[in-house]
Structure formats: structure tokens, C-alpha cells
Image (cartoon, rainbow, N blue to C red; front, side, top):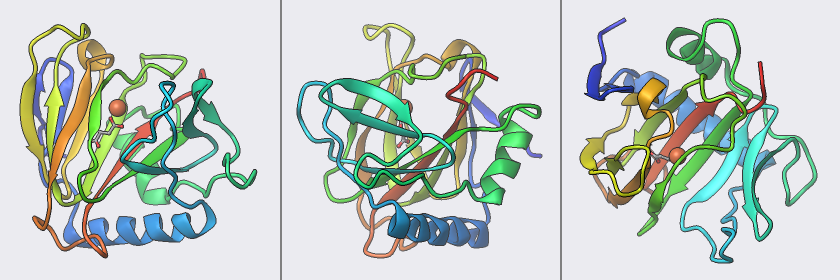
Length: 205
Ligand code: SIN
Ligand code: FE2
């Protein structure tokens, strides 16, 4: 395994970790999953629909509506379970996430057009000792990461297709978001755009 770049303490980046073939296989797995669990633009607690389309792999999917954010074992729209986590993602988590406790949620974010994600913390998981692993596919994202307070200074960096990053330790609860997508920077995603996968352990081990 190549050594990651430590961008800020606890935020590690493996540029281009995934081969073009591995990237294409994950994109195919995402669109297959979306047949069974269509992308949705969830409402935030403030009532506004998110610009990012979301669905999930694994036993639990992250969802949002007017009553708040949560992990659910059924798709809100259909009442059906989420599609299974692809083995390649389980393997990546074993290597870079946690060797003993599997992830129970793989959030799939689809950015098209002007989609973006405002600064937020990932704090709906029971145990922040487990990291969040993030995989970028398709168009490059202008990503921003700060500290554990909204007022902390932030850094901007580009995440390109095949990059993998990890939020753990002092960066596990860091504010982060996506300012914009560089449309047309990759041709990996059919009809364009960016897919981001985040692997998490939502329930206690
Ligand atoms: C997220 O914070 O859920 C997504 C981050 C990203 O798209 O890179
Ligand atoms: Fe996040």
C-alpha cells in the first residue's frame, strides 16, 4: 500500500489509488444499485431539497427529511432494503478503514450540474472511533476541509477520479464539503458528473 498524503492531521489522501478498471466497476455497481434504490434528493431539516442525489449500499442508508438525519434499514421511497455493499468496497475498508469491524453503510452521492455540498460534520454515526472512507469517481471536486469548529480555517483541495481519502482521529469530526464540481474533467460517469462513495460504520461494533 502506498503511503497517503496527510493533508491535515487525521485527513489522509491516496491520490489515484483505484485503477481505471476498478473505478469503472464501481460506477457500474452504482448504477446497478440505483435500479433497485433510485437516487433521491432528500430534504434537509430546513426543508430544502439537497442538490446532490443520494442512495446507499449496505444494511443501512443515510437519509434525511423534515424530522432530521438518520440511518435507516429501508429505502424511504420504496420500503425495500438497500442493495448489498460491493465486495471491492468491503476489501478497501478492511485495508484502510477497520480490519475487524465491517462498514454497515455506503452512502452514494451523485453530483450533476451545479450540485454541491455545504460544510457539515459526519456525526450521525454511533462511534467516531471508526473512520469515514471516501472514494471519488468521475469529475473532479473542489473539496474543502476545516476543523471541528465551523469557524476554524479551511483548506481547499481537488479530489479526482480514483482518489481515496479518510477522515479519522482528529479529523473525524472535521467540517467538510464540496464547493463545486469541475464539469467535463472526466468521462467516467455516464451523462457526466461525479460520484462520491463514503463508507461508514453507523451502528456500534
Ligand atoms: C460527504 O461529505 O458526504 C461527501 C464528500 C464528497 O463528496 O467528497
Ligand atoms: Fe460528509
